[in-house]
Image 1 (cartoon, protein in one colour):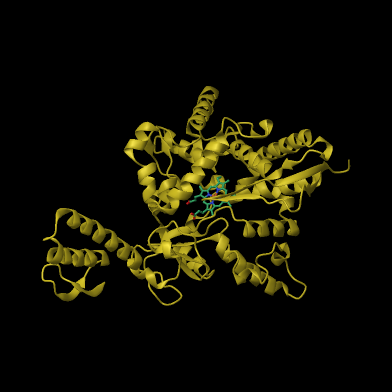
Image 2 (cartoon, rainbow, N blue to C red):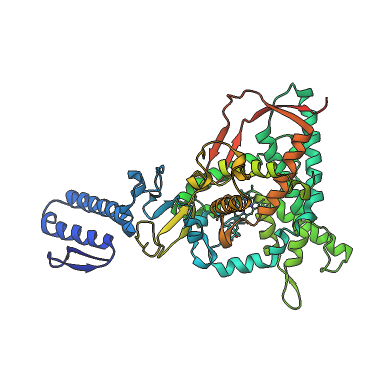
Length: 488
Ligand code: HEM
């Protein structure tokens, strides 16, 4: 970067190669030397502090040349700023948010090789005071691959049917628990809450063939949701300003006082140990899945090397990732309107509320500007999903947009659908897209028809506002419905 600046030694203008922050320091030191050192100590100190603050503000404003992009004034200095409408918006001193769907493959495409930014550091869980990377937080592609490869098959589409009986068990539980509580349709229920209870019991069931019994209880257990929500709310801050994570989480002093700041590790570790003991007692060879759940597969995958050695922390890491995160599956795949409704719901209400940031050194912006090394760029589903590529009425809930319209040929529909799918960031994109995508589909595509076949559902009050809280994830509550058993 070249510019004219004051040389602090000579006080003369000259060509200077270096970051803008150094140029500003140079200028301030020169001015201090020339005018202030003769004044009294207080004013010298005030001038030094003032010069440092001003120089930092300037440096942040011009960082990586991002001042060329619009954005709220605050975003030029800090990430504590709301974003504004625009194709490329500056949302922090070193961060851009891009909404143009053509950038999904350019930013996330496997061949581009852009790595996750430091925004993911806060997601690294801490167990017994130590940081260890999770699938979500790890940035080094080699470490990510080593972590993911042994268990990729456990998440594949073909493995899915193994988990179906476990999901079925939870759907039967959900319907039974709801029936008990709706009092013949007179008692309102918060279906948002019940979907959450169901989702957690399903994930525990398919991972460990066990649950904590959220649906039995009909609510939170031991303040788990409360702590999880606190954690996610905190992540909202830490993720948008990753340096705060080093202050509040990955910090030896904080670790010393809170040995175990992540929510589930103790409980999960005891489940893993329990399974290992049972396997040992059965004296069944390691190569056979005793239980067709995720843990069975993780234990299998954690026997590495020759002779095989069991890596407990790896098995625990994979299991924890799952734990933190309902008509037959095959039939639900052939219900086009159900498919359209689910796609439209995920378009209008994506699960992640922030941009998925990558360090996009060298990426060319639509105005031709090539981003300097280290610049972070993210795309946010809540913004991308409302671009014209999805149609004219993007703010409306219109499942039909996913179906073939009467005026469209099959080929045209396929083309349009593919364009929308390529822009879809609901489960991320590229090599770091969601591992749990098919399991989530299994949960969603089965539970919706099961609920609709069992109950007539009606909102308590059409004007009721949902409570939607957007942090890293977006959660919703207060979706109050009356459920009436069908045919009764
Ligand atoms: C409707 C449910 C879900 C949605 C919408 C969703 C969405 C996402 C998105 C958008 C990402 C990409 C994050 C990024 O690029 O920064 C992601 C990553 C991830 N998801 Fe999900 N997710 C869901 C459920 C699940 C479930 C049930 C699991 C566990 C079984 C899971 C495990 C993961 C993991 C491990 C990653 C990190 C992948 C990597 O970086 O390699 N997700 N998810």
